[in-house]
Image (tube, rainbow, N blue to C red; front, side, top):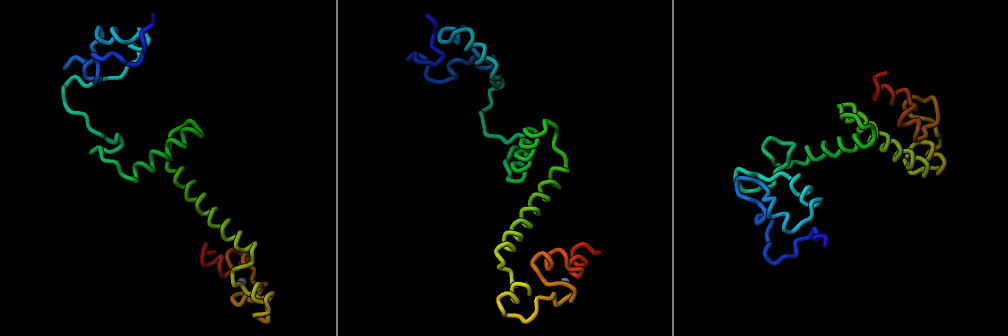
Length: 161
Ligand SMILES: [Zn+2]
């Protein structure tokens, strides 16, 4: 009969009872309770043989203390590995900021589509202003797009051109 991979024997309560202090897994003890396959899997989990107490440690900081920053970087790296199967670079963070920026623009455009920004075109449509023309460049109607992106004065302020 195949032995159960789960310890149900009353003799074993703690994993440490299957470990010989200073030597690692006690294989003859493991064989009493597990089949060969399970023993193989168990002994692939390394155990400390120097007898210091276990503690929680974050592997990405030398002091082992978790920080949100390193957690964030690890998550980004993991996502990147999932997507491209290549190491993370600083370009990832540029991409991230670009994505955030796109999201902001999209939010603006959503608001634009609902005509809720008080640009002159909207004020004119609502008969609050008597002209839709941009009061800064005096060249075109001031739509949200014009105010945020197209007005030469906005472009100069944002992009220096
Ligand atoms: Zn303008």
